Length: 335
Length: 97
Image (cartoon, chains in turn orange, green):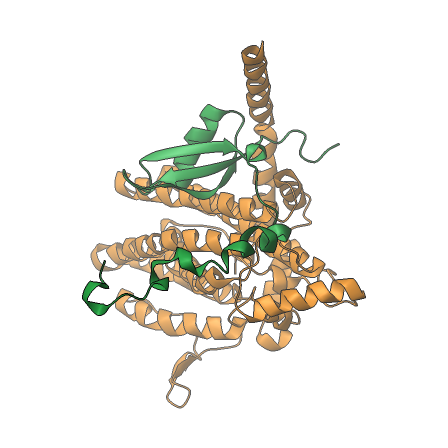
């Protein structure tokens, strides 16, 4: 998901979340735990355990990075959108992603880390972003599929975070979720046009895009519950509300019917309705691929990061000039 | 180097959704000067007709109460129930006043 941070931290040597406390700290810790248990929100200036702060900073900043890097695969298609209407929609969607990144960076900054430090962590490879954005957008159908499946999966994951115990994150997520539904619907709508009114070649293009995005989308929800060592602590803290496997199942169940209406198949021979479970069964996910992509070796990891770094460096003179201008103006006013 | 030395300053954004309502805090952003802060607030926080007016204030200009002083500041109101209209039991015939 955009929030894979907690799932990947164990493997990235971020360490265990629990540690031993002194007596004074224990009082604060007990008070904090009681507030979490009561369903209270924690605000930025309230006392919080170091690891709660660290885990949130990690998750929110990587969520923000995902929104920003997520603009790149779609940005590739702005100049090639098939109609003016689709171009305007795509521009609006990508602008939203930029906005979502900003809401989230602002929420993360309240935890005491500067925007520049977070950006530096992304650019140096220390901070990650969602694995999904390391896959290429090869055709126009990929853009519709990203809206339908990637944003669909994101919504599934993000709605529970609106109840996150850390209030600035929860507030940002509420704002984001309100805007996200348009992203999914426009994607589905664009695929529907191709499936219903398109040529055979266009229909085949949609099917091909779905085939390529389906498995990476299921991976977005993160490793299976029995391989997510930090999930329990995340749940305890009210940062994670629903488990990876539960969300993944919910996504599969919702998507199967949508695929039917669209007229595409999902690339999984093991996909079938389980009457007993009242859920769709699905095939095994290739977790080796997931860890390879998270580890930096996906199809587009290098390209994405290089684009971000270039944009940041090319824009440096603008940021500096704006600041110099502002300083000069305020000096003039003071004189 | 100070990590924030070259960062644009932080601004808090308040949006009035429509005439007659309060400006409400909705988030923050970085901008080099007031004019840019206003423009960016428009782009970041009012993309869907959420606003009819925007205020931006430098974050470092806001004076805030300390969460640690919460009890001291706000407890005194706890035992003043007579400040609420429901404190007064009146005869049914006039209770709607």
